Image (cartoon, rainbow, N blue to C red; front, side):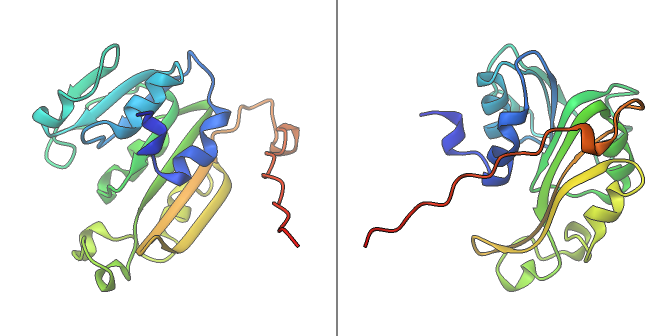
Length: 188
């Protein structure tokens, strides 16, 4: 089975923008469903999670780091990546490091649960649920936000953002617009 079958639709929406050879950070990656997708696309992946057993599922050549992101210092120092990917994870004290880890011209693709999720299931702890606009605010003034969504998707209350760090010599209008799929015609 292709890794894309298990990937978030939000992640898959942006995947055509990532080229082989790019560096990618899959943060709080668990068993690596997105790490595998990035490896299949030819990216150089650094996968980070605190669950050493789950990390064993991530294939080579990924760089695998076992780190407790909530109780230890940021494990990546000043490293920057062409893609920083976070799904289903929130630890507010790390938001500045996550944004800072995006290289010039690089991407942040982030999707996680928001307040209101407690009506649908776990997580219910407000420490792990984004406040309205919180993910967007974490990016503003630091990254150029290409898309932001806040709502119910597939029975979960989420926020998600796709953003890029501008290169000093580029402005957003110089980036090509992303193509949307053509609407499908319905049969008469």
